[in-house]
Image (cartoon, rainbow, N blue to C red; front, side, top):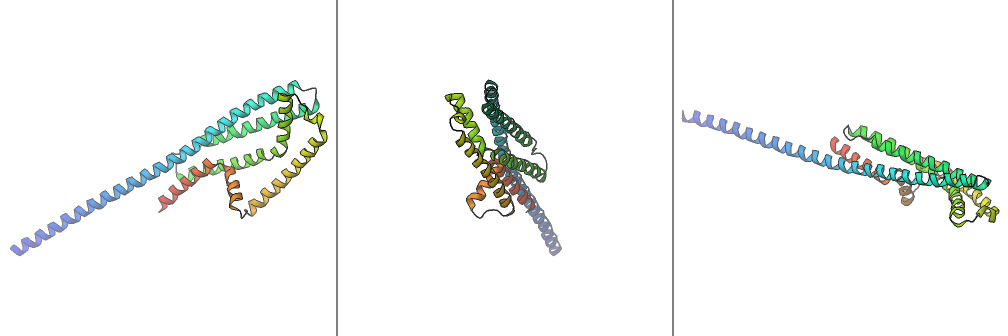
Length: 231
């Protein structure tokens, strides 16, 4: 009888120990899940902050270009009787409108990235924003091979009262010609690098920066979350 009672006591003790270990495992799993969720939330918060800074910066750029458009419009209206000054003011005016559109579009695309959905959906929206940012940055950056001269002509006349084209038309024509050649070379390099990225880390970094540092940071943090969830 005592042996049967001893066996029953061991079985009861074994059941209690198994139940206790089960509770420990459940608590450990719960703590691990809580830690994982907290880590995920921190990474999403950092990614959201990077995207927010990007969007705010785009709005600041749009405000700056609005001011520039007002200056350019006033300039070409005041010099509409001088063909080359009229043309310079109109070019800056048109470029400013394009820059405003690009900045506002980037800000809207950034605002359309909602962090309440799946990580893959967020990454797709960020990828679309990165593509538009890269293309618009290149499209707006290339004209500056010639646009810096146009801006210089406008600035010299506006603030110094000097008409550079009237003073040195040959230099202005040669500089514009060089700018056109440089733009064509830049387009050729961009097409070449899209197929065969340059070996130089500095050049690769410069190309990557076209999509925006904050966007790269946000995309990288979301990628870490996705890899973490798959593990």
